[in-house]
Length: 262
Ligand code: 13P
Image (tube, rainbow, N blue to C red; front, top):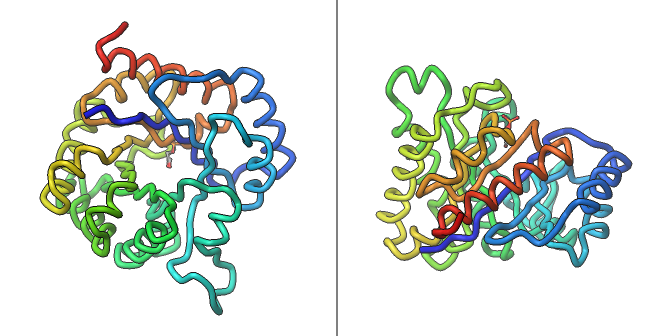
């Protein structure tokens, strides 16, 4: 199964509108068509309108970093799926470890968010991953399985086709200490097997599964060249347009290698 790869940048709480706009200008100046992959940028909500305009009719797609599961109502400070759709988003990150740990989001809430996104034809980027102590206690699979199965609990196999999963081990996020590509491949293969038991082999083999955690231009190729890894979700290194472009180029190189070329 040939899956379109993804190079996604999660800017987290970085960049004002002005900074985002300057980034887009620098990025687009060096952008070209890339084979076999999608480029996605997930800025803060406030930068979505300006980036939608700047990325209009370019290959760069927009994503958001969070959403509420209800469509509207008395939820001060929250943002809904139709609001994100209107802003030109194709993707929405949900269940990021920072939301789970700092803001105490539960897997059950994440599951409702995923369901709502699918009903608005927005693709969820569902993040899962274990902490260092969970890994050391040998609980990686158990933790990842719980987050994954609750995250997709309400989806039909048809809705699951638009899912993207990001495996982000918490200990690798922002630490400069990435997983090894082999360890990431092993967990990601396990995720694909779990998706196959839940939605069937055919649907599972079409779902993109990304790796995230200290991805850099120097290591991205080694991750994406793995059989089950379909791209990366990049934090720190996506904040610099030159570095992120290099990550995109390396992802294309991995695509060409995987599809039997160079
Ligand atoms: P870093 O790439 O900075 O480690 O962050 C990863 C991440 O959390 C992406 O969502």
